[in-house]
Image (cartoon, rainbow, N blue to C red; front, side, top):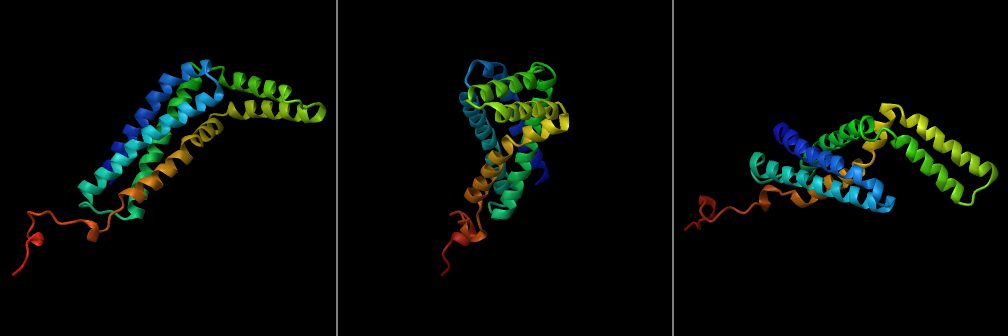
Length: 186
């Protein structure tokens, strides 16, 4: 299982990282809701590679059968590798082309708070919350953990769906017509 986990986890992670690299510069030109839709669509598509990996593992290493639990473990491990690739790419982008991300995001949080109609202490609390985010996000461990929370729920759902679809008990595997088990006995 180790070979398939690494192979398909890295393939999924590479697809996810490359798509992140290609889309981040363009996301400044679309609305936040479109950016989220694009981002989560890319995540789902890259996690389809995990589906292929679990299927390959089932068909080649497990003789065509796999339990839900074993498929789930394989899928989750592949998905975690993919997610860590996503986080690594985001940290690289944050240190290079997205150096002002935290300040720009904080400014947008402050602007949203100001435009929301809040006044007085409530507005000041929202602004303080935005600046607290800016301080916390400057810590690479915090930003990595927050970034991991983006693909993780999608990946877990995809791993569950994959395990549910691909599980196959030994009795579910039909013998082929050419196998001796398929021949009638007299």
